[in-house]
Each structure stands twice: as C-alpha cells, then as structure tokens.
Image (cartoon, rainbow, N blue to C red; front, side, top):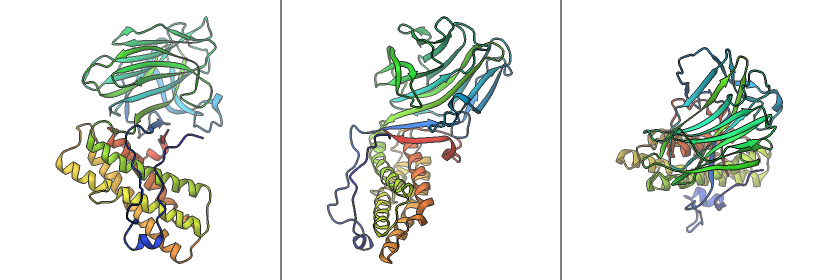
Length: 400
C-alpha cells in the first residue's frame, strides 16, 4: 500500500451544490510547497506512450528488440514485471540503445530495472545494460551501467559523467537484477544503484550512491536513453520499470505551479472517487460522497478564472508558460477531464436527491477524468509525447 498525499476533503451539502457551489469559507486546501512526488512508470518501453527509436549504431540487425516479452521468473507479478523489454543478440558484439522522445524539464529522477534470466551469450566484464540522462541542449551525459561479472555471478555497477568514470564501482554478488537511478537533487545528480528485493523500483538491498556530480548550467531539459551492449549471440538483457519522477511544485515557473496545484487537488479527489468505485460502495451515503468528490474535482478543473482549464487557456493565450511546458496539450487533457467529471457530478447530485443508491453510472466518467487529469499534470511538467491515445495501457501515474 503506497502512502497517499491528499488535500483536505470538503464535504459539500447537496443543497448548497445545487444552489451554486461551496459554502463560503469551505477549507479547500491547495498543495503548496513541499509535497508529493509524481511517478510515471512505463510498462511498455516501446509503446505509444513512450515514442522512441533505436539509435543507429551502424548495424540495425544485430539485436532483436521486443517491447513486451514474457519474463518467466516474474510470472504473475502484480506490478506487471512478467512483461519486459527483451534485447536479444543475433550475433557476437550485439548492442542497442533506445532513445526516448519524452523530454522533461526540471528536477526529474529516472530509474530503470535491468535483468538477466540466462547466462548464455553474456560476456564477462563486457555485457551490460545502461541508463543515460542526455541534456536536451547538449552537455555532459550521466550514465549508469550494470555490467555482467562472472567472478561474482552478478552485476557490477559503474557510473560515468561526461564519459569519465564517476566514483567507485559497486558489486552486486549473485544478483540477476539491478536498479539504476539518476537522482536529480537540484544542482547535482546522485548516481545510485542496487539490487531490488521485490517488485519495487526503490526498495533495494544492497544499495549505494556511486557518485554525486554537478549539473551543468542550462541543462534542465533532458531526454533519456537505455539499452544493452556487449552481448554475444543469444545473449539477452531484459529492461523494465523505466520511471520518471518529479516534484509537486511543477518547478518550471510560477504559472505552472499555480495551475499544477489545481490539477493535483483534482487528481486526489478523483482518485478517492476511483477507490470508492473499487470498493463497490453503494447506498445513499456513497452517492452523496461521490457527488461531493466529483463536485470538488470539477471546481479545480473547470473553465473559469480559478479553474485549471480556464487558467491554462489564459496562460496559453498570454504566452506566460515556459517553453518546455506542453500548455496546449495540457489544456486539451484538462478540457476532456472537465467534460467527463462535471456532468458526472451533476448526475450524482441528482441521484442523491432522488434517493439513488448506486455510483456505478459514473464509473467510466471517473476513469477518464482521472487519467486525463494525471496526463495534464505530466504535460504541465514538460512531458512530451506524440501519441497519448493508449496511455491507459502503458503508463502508470502515482503519487508518493
């Protein structure tokens, strides 16, 4: 069970809603300052949620790449680890790099799980899986490598900054999986790694900070790359749980922060609504609670001077958003969310007045509203992708 960060839940009497909104002074708490961390987890590393391309290394046929292959050691995994990106070499010396088209701006931490399930084709001190952060405008590249080490029957982790070794290597004896993490702490990057103890991408034992390296000026925007190198024929590296983490402040600018607060609050109300549905709640109390949750979410999303949709429209028109902010895309996502959430709130309010006991009629409204609100938050933070239509199947959004 993950720790949830939620704003104060306002229970609005149904009559007050119908008469025009919240009672005066209703304590709707915004999310300012230090708060949650947003985590985008890509379950399909080659899917439409993560437009990417194999980097040209002069040999496009040396590696067979399958974005979602069955990983038998994790059969039945609740976290979806039974499906992973499979990089299998067709010849000695095989290598492949996947470069994402997802560009994020601000303090963004990236993580990746690297695994092997067979020793065939693994070359001692040569075969590796890697994670890189590449500044969008150029600058030093931060890189972590999980290198196969036959002497310890596991991985050795190496770190690099600008092509030069950074810090001492770390051994993970007998490890068949390793997590690589480039942690953005503001002015520095902490190059971190360890062996996962289960499905979590952050619970590691052992684990270590290999190095702390300074961030070069004007390198806040970045794309990410991951892949495998040094595989002999039939050698296979498995990749999973590529994640991007960013803070609640939507740090690229004050306008983004203000709009982000609205979207964050709406997301929390909608997540509460989804949990109510997941619990199969019913009865007059459930209907009233659902109406309250959707109403409060709608207040945050609506097309008004104080709603996220209206604020986004004004900011796009005035040109007050940072260049990296996907303002038009965030507006479109918020508009869709609003179009599903507000009618559902009205339906639940009317159902409550009529003595209704079922919240199931708004099931699809909550699901769409939640997903589109989460997408808008990511877009406000600079998440850029050419194909968002199938995000529900490939991208998981969580608040920790």
